[in-house]
Length: 483
Image 1 (cartoon, rainbow, N blue to C red):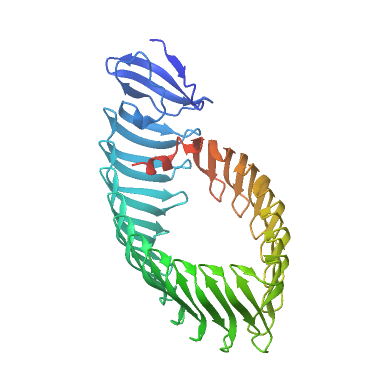
Image 2 (image 1 turned 60 degrees about the vertical axis):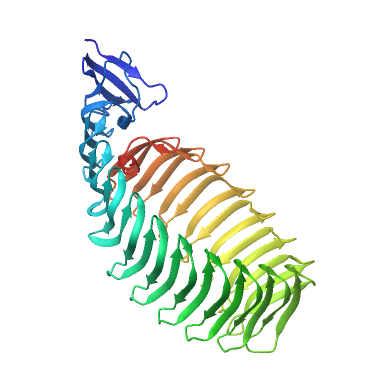
């Protein structure tokens, strides 16, 4: 019988060739439009006068073994179908031949243990358990043979204790879940084993007292929550136990008097708030002299022109903030305790306006950009602490425009992409720090399109995924992302 090739108009990446019709159905084979085979021959059940042109294989009435291939000819996936349903072992591979994933289907649903492997190390993987398509049972993440995360799920929702671990095996986080929501005690630890944060969740929201600790065991801060909203007294301390800050929250907003102190016990600042807005007497005091600035705020606005000042513990200036006619005006300046510039923030009539910049404590510039009426406008640049340029991009009225370039701290280029009206458009390329290409693909209106290639540090291509309007239509991840 003469073979017939059908082209899918809506999806331009594949074609389907009819090999034979029979009482069982149509034996077909799929190809990339560039000619490479996408599948081995497979059977679509039913006596159909028109061959289905969908390339979502899980939606087709397939019977028998289905094997998918990358454009390179390397095997991508393999699974058996019975009367349109996936049944039995599912296996997948990266382009360079390493196993990418494995699992089991029962009546088209994931069942039992599934694993997804890292592309450069089979000793690094995510292991999940399924029951009738639902994530159900133990879940863990292994990195180079070391346990990183463990927990359990019930009917797709997190349940019980979830724990994460540092490289030395010390537990870093413990969180409890009930029906997918955080419920019960929450604790984090420093790598040394000392407690860092302790709190409590109820129905996914912070509830009651939450306490943060310094690594020496001394309390750093504590505050109370009611249905995830700050409520009541807030307190903070220095590492030696001396009080640093005290204030009060009402329905998540600062309210009443807030005070902070220097390490020597002298008052640093005193502010009064009404529902989160400064209202009343406010003052800032020098740590070593009687110098201070004081002004009255009326619903967030100082009642007179003033240059607000704040100081570091050593007496050096920390902040200089001018107000004119009740609004931020001119350059606000911040300094580190060594006298080095920290930030320059430009204001005009209460809006960000002009050129602003930030510096590292060693004097190296960290970022610089131009504001126009509260929006970034023009070139913006970021640097590493060693002076190497980190990121360069352009804004127009707060929206990204044109090329965006990024570099590693070593100076090796990390990424190159292009924005049009705030959305990624056109070619996207990233590199590993050794200079080898990492990712190559394209965007349209902020959505991934076409074939994307992914590479290991040694230059080997390990994955190639086809995207249509931001959604992957091929690739191993697509199977893991669906039930």
